[in-house]
Image (cartoon, rainbow, N blue to C red):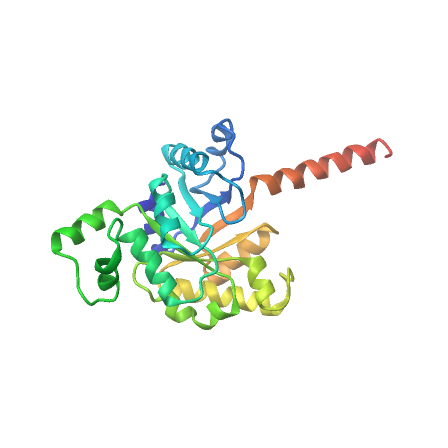
Length: 260
């Protein structure tokens, strides 16, 4: 799956599956390509990747038809264009709360490389691009996907406005930050958290864009959200988290069998 395939699937409501990859080991590619993923997710907001390593990973996974999506450190359009130049096909911007933030990111991702006043006037509808330039940016950026994190009460309050920005491809819930913003940190079974997740997912799908969440917990919960609320951008777990859970379970089992 390339970026254009991913974008089409998100808007059509087809489910796509990915996971968070933290390992930069080249050997990892040999095995991860066969687990049924459509895309891979790299997080530069919370994980330490240097620019060269991140670029190598993006190009390597893209060559295996696993679309690389990168969460940038901040909702800065310059961060977005930098990771796109490094081989990413999609960007996820963290903690979005305003329409201006979404519009600026769409401009950076979908109208690249235009910048400055010309870009601003195009985004505001003041001055359209020349037809030749419009055709050029559409073709040049056909594989670029722009996603935003909705993870606060302020974002939920403005959700209808955020998802209405032309060019946005999807919303991804940040469950930990959202639970904290709701005042119920890590209480993922809490009715208010469940209600907020369902509202975000349904609102996104109703607008015809992708509805996602990066969830490290029970897979059954993701199944319920997909069936009942339209979740179609599934970022399931992470390589490191899966390792810790599986190895921890096995080590505890060995110790128990040996009476330790």
